[in-house]
Length: 325
Length: 286
Image 1 (cartoon, one colour):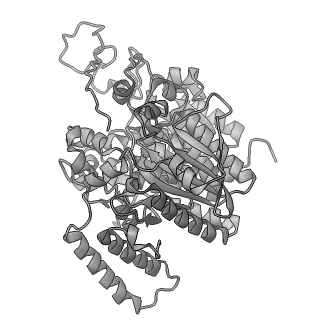
Image 2 (spheres, one colour):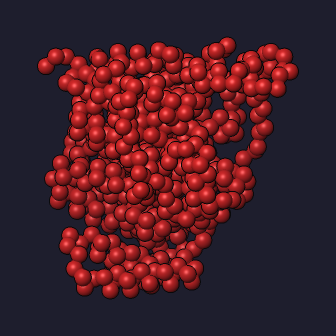
């Protein structure tokens, strides 16, 4: 991943080292036949990771939450500027409206035509209000589904960018079938025969994020988060005090590197020093490189195989014990 | 970051009958209830028809033909992948739920017949950690779908949930994707999938397998919401009507197919399965 990073935008070293170790670990685990010689290496890697973790070299989860929500962090439209120079925006769900919390359209990524869909939170207060802070209504998820079907029809790879606190909590949204729209979006994504890649670029908030994120490859930017509930929401419910957000953030393991280690996401994209908000162009370049790499890998598989692997991946998700009695 | 204003919302039912009794009362109509009266009446108040949440085993007994149910994936147990610790460790919370309910998780998975039609039946129990969806539930759902496809059974799932199992973090969110992918397997095999949404069906359960069924049935008065009322009122400053998200409202808004009284549930389910093929050979004689 981003092996030829220039020294100017060198990623922070602790994450970098941990990431490289984790990637090697995953490579070794994925070897078809497991040669004995590698068990020493796995052990060495695990010990080193443990050491890095114990020294507390990683950032506190709460700091990452702040970075992930940073107002100047690049958003979908910023990536479009740097990644898709010929972008044509497409609008509307063809049923009821156009939700500005989700944007999408056609563009050329490198030499490849793609469909891109992503949440757009907005940078200024005015834009944020207009886009409901990236919290989509059913119209937004239906627009995403419509664009996914368009990609499928014309066999264009689908790239989604995730950046939302969650689905919009409103009376109209609920009555308009928010739950059904999210569920149907997930169902739509599980059936696409085209290559699909998602990048969590900021906040991956709950069902509103998952509605765009059930893809062949799920990548996360280094300082993005992905969680079943906001840390504040979790704290309010479990600690009965939303001010305990920092504790909840740690407990939820919502930062990219933790989720990668848990096998819940497929890769982490390091950010420029200081975070993505300090350099949109450099961040977009890294995202672009990793997305292109992922699509290239996926294009080598035939569609049926790709679909089978996607299903297998999601059907394997979860950790449980077996009572042998 | 959004700053929230805490709004105190009191939702107390006005007492309809004079409250003087010391014995159990219906929480809806305040009518006195005799010991065991609810249990004998399918957990429905005999006075006001309020449908109480039903323990999972009672629900299986209601829907499955007598003696036909065999439980699958019963050996699966929750585990603590994140070593989650809030005010109490997660294992302490699920062990307590296991002791109090006699269940191993928030969903039972059974292979059975429903009026003679082969079925794979999943039944959630709200008493188990608020019917929250964790990894065990996702895996049981998947095993039900596999069994449905393998023996050509209809998939029937009774939902009742407060949402995701927060203590399992993103593993919990991924169960939405896992259950929907499982439902896709059933759909691709051309088999019927029916969900029965009971009070309450909310959050990630409502926004995943509950709403991708061929037919969605709800019980009277059940509340279905994706976002919680408090969050909606805080975010939008909208005042929600008291019946917001109710089965009857969901029906009016086109989100579900029908509202069916618990006494008629099995019969209605059977008739639906007959049209869709009940698992064994499709709706038309082929």
